[in-house]
Length: 261
Image (cartoon, rainbow, N blue to C red):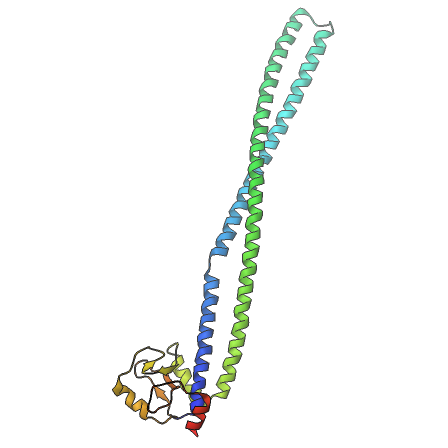
């Protein structure tokens, strides 16, 4: 196959765009596979679950405290009624003895209830302290998640924008390059990531294998518009150095124009 050298060199631009698209796809996959955000969400959910559990425990203690307060109130009212009966002067000695015994029992009962209430209140205070700490940790976790989500969205948006730009560049190049050359490139690119590479000295820019002097003879002898393939990896070899004597150096656009004319 023959193709203008400038069109061949455009394959390097097309290859650079495709390499960029591959890298963008890898960045997208890496971003989608990153578990840091999911881990942070699970941690935040664990904190929220713990906070909900503590809230339930505090609610249970508050019910117990309220129940005890009601019992204390009943005991106090009963003790007040007994003392009123004893002070009325209407109770018999035997009744007074019974009232006195009951008052002692009520006092013990009230003391036990108040001790229980104090214990529950101390437990509630401890749980409320833990809950306050958890709420702070949850707020920090949620803030970190929001920031991470924003960073991921921003990174994904950048990838999408760069991908759209690269796809536009690719369309423009495939239109500018002759169809037969594009078809050859696409057939190779479907099998391997690098379909076109520069021949640098004696080294293929794709497989990096240095060719022997004997292998270089047909390459040097080939017309400048001959489309060459690397025998090792099969990619299109793009010559950017002019044939001839002297040390090899990249050809400028003007030199290539003169050589090709």
